[in-house]
Length: 454
Ligand SMILES: [Fe+2]
Image 1 (cartoon, rainbow, N blue to C red):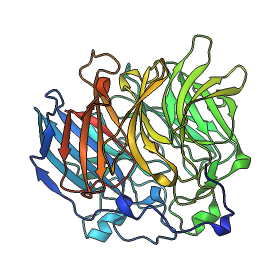
Image 2 (cartoon, rainbow, N blue to C red):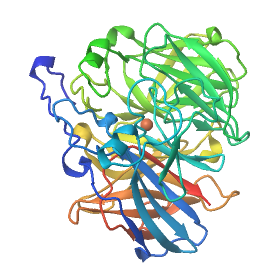
Image 3 (spheres, protein in one colour):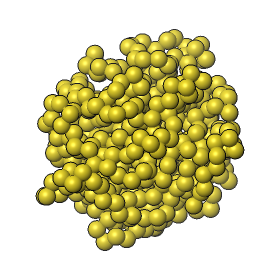
Image 4 (cartoon, rainbow, N blue to C red):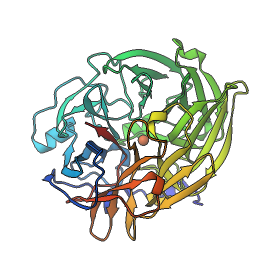
């Protein structure tokens, strides 16, 4: 385990500008990629991902990993071929100014330059780069060029998030968003047509950083945790002016998806920690809610410039609104993050989950498959010096069993300083990959991505 050093003794240079955290500078378009193995014929679409890629060299003493300009990377698959790889800056106002490009049209929200660097999704026929804390979604073309900033056709009142949850039954996106000027979190529902249909303000006692949320078939889970806005940090120009705030405490809010008033949220205390990412959540018959989470022991305490406060581990939280408490159970004590699952089961009971190794000091490694019923796990080791980013699960078809599908991820190879897209079969997780698609560049360690079928 890591220990906490007094603030004055901490190294203050970002580790998020070296190695494969460092930005790439070229925007590439490369056709007909080299493939080892066979790409499944049924995979027609794009595997996209995004992360921070500062367009100009930032000050390494203050650069926060979460603040870099967005760059989206994509591989397009069709009929067993890897047709192209593209990477493009998301054209926020800093990017367009630095590169001498026309200003991106569309609305703006709050201060800042409109950076969108955290997730990339397909919704309502559009590709969006998305981010939390005040930035608006950015519409991209199929080929990943920026079109405009978006407030969902004027229907989004303020902030959005990098982690909306797509309800497979309704096609709606459910999100919990925050903004430093607000004394509330906001539950936002975006319809299948890409327009906001509902917002509910949820009062909270401070200004927490709320990265993600969960839904069940009946509830939305709201994470109100001990990382809060710090005006003094903001005045210094810190890219992400949020700090560890243990006095604030940690709680999970349970709110009916039908609610129209956030005061109805039932808050359930949980021990001090920080969760960016739930794996999935579901209702129990007795009114409790299960949510599996990747849990960090602290956040921005030892290292104020990124998530480097001891390895995150996999836990099951059983949230009991009647008792106002959360029961915690450790599922896997290995360092891991970026949990994913079969998204046909968002809000419904899941058996399987997939994570990427994420140890102390932001060290990456293999992928893990978890069987959360049998309580077993498998490891896919990508080979010496090869480490995976977030693994994305794609079922072989709509009716496939929960783990009958592909686990797709961008894998960095330190020996060649390039990346591959690697496709595994989830039911043969430890076997050699089904396909390895060789990219002409490296894809920096970043945040999230998705398979967006055509
Ligand atoms: Fe995230």
